[in-house]
Image (cartoon, rainbow, N blue to C red):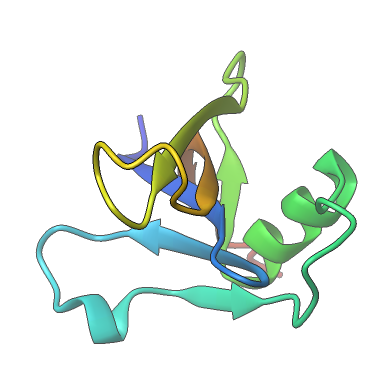
Length: 95
């Protein structure tokens, strides 16, 4: 069985995807930037980006959405939407 990781997409002014790798610095995490704030990337777009980064959604996993804010406890602070899903490395294709 392949190791699993958490992938996230977040909107902090534009949509950004990344795979959380706890054993490496954040600056080395695989990532992708859609360079847009709307619309929300579709499930197909997310899967394509994860594949380009070398990952695939684990069987049965679903995106889980949460919200955060720039300033904790301030209801007037802009909302940040974050979606998380469990992924695994894609199997290598051998010829």
